[in-house]
Image (cartoon, rainbow, N blue to C red):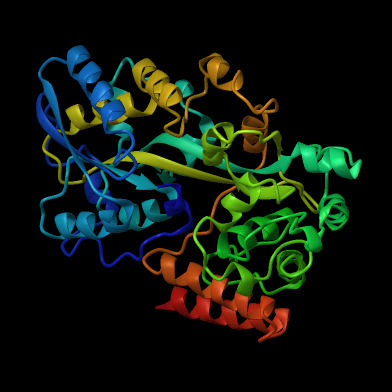
Length: 423
């Protein structure tokens, strides 16, 4: 299920007859506070349907007169289904969006601006929601979705391998140089042990670029700029790992969960991956591990993934839809249910709410929140998002396989991305 974090489905035109955003700013085509509203989601199925049902039941009990009809789809099918519904003027009243796809729907007029509904709700407390998450779902100063969950990427490390090598554990002050030095000492190819694992991919590249102080796009968003000196430094950091401190791209060969199996078997010392891995690692017998905020180069920059609940621009039940979106975002019931079931983390600005979460292993679980101090959100370009990500990954892999120089791969990727933006 978590593998979907690494793939964003290509989006077609979201609304064949969508109006401008200004037409969606007054509360949609209706503001009924009662009735049945529909909710379309990808993150609940199949593992958290019971959890969502518990949240829905609690919401309906607290809001008599509002019923929620839940519809689900697998992530691989979700956006195609959502596009079809919106284009057919049959959009769900509320639906889930990830950050990467959010902007396409907002810019194409598919979403209702929520500001007027927020002002009309005397019980709404914006301070309850994590500020950076709230800001992430704004366009031109208007709120077009309410953040519901987040997860981030950390450095996961095997304590036994560090102990065996006589090395100090990674710390929050580590830089790339520190990580590289440790990875080289921890790698023992004869024993099948590798010091590091970081995929050669778009997601790791944009983050490494930010860690070097670089920019993926120009300030006006019309040109790719990641093929400069800082981009070269970031790409070389990633491409220098396969075949030295981690298996080659060919050895990995697109095998699903190759890195997960390697780490769980005790053959991988350091692993760049998301906090969604913690639950399965805690269930792995004999595994002694911990986490830390990822090393930076000239600065810290941490990948954060966010989901939100949006309201359709065409809904006739704006007030009821707003109440449901807000409940999914920050209600006590939602927060408790998500934490108890390891269903991502609620995007709330409430440290006390996470007390139970922080008591679970690994010991330094506080690093999950430390990573939020320096967020690096993925660059987004609209309908061609998936193509852009695929282009960058493919060119980086060509460099990793020796088919192109690193600079040539970056130049080719940047030219292709700039061409996509100009379409």
